[in-house]
Image 1 (spheres, rainbow, N blue to C red):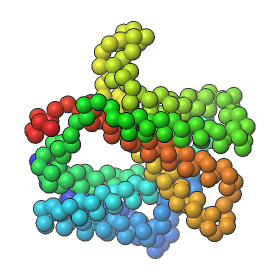
Image 2: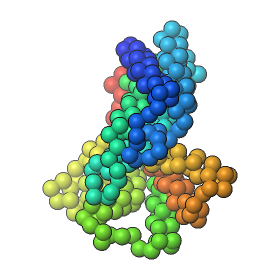
Image 3: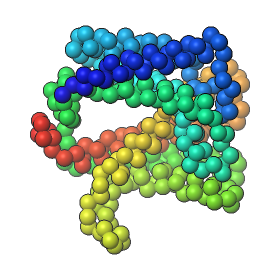
Image 4: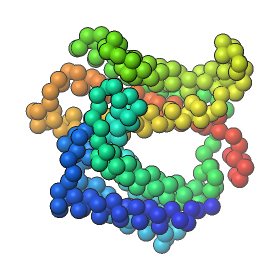
Length: 298
């Protein structure tokens, strides 16, 4: 069933955010603590994206759904998500305040609002996509009988991206500073889990069935969203933040203003590779563990 409320709410949110950003463009912005701006893309581009969201969701509502409009809604959602990419630092700094990431309430609020518009643009796109594909529940996405070879390649590419990022750190700056305090230790532990354990869990059997050494749960099925949820979330965070960073890296290289080129051209592409690998492996895990659709039985 189409979410009839989605275009209306998406249009209203995009309008409100466009008005806010236009006000800041004309009258000046607050002082940002985290960076020189609240977003990673120019303010005028974000305003234009919001106006485009309004136009696209209105056209979807009028036409009842067309594939070019659905694709446009997804593309605008991606652009706005990348614009709010620094929200990753807000979350990391909020969870681990000892890392020294500046607290930026105004910037966080702006990025969160941008992300909300992006999310509802995606909800609208998904709603019409499912209707166009003939199943309001699953978009007729077929299940996988087993983990395909391309998923293994993607998972190990993610691990390779993580390893390349560590290599860039160690080769150019020395050992990772584990001894700088408990906050750093927690961060590095989570960093390693997301770079090694998570990608491998997405393609190996122990990511679906608890292994024998997990005594209380051994042999039971792993809840699929316990694995695929973090997989998609980390992939989205890496691709949004470092995808935008790769664009900025290219611009600074062309302009001749890039600092630490050897490190940056190793670390940022490594993060992007990590994110792409996780996204592909998560998609395979999602399809392989997908229960039969009660509507279309796909």
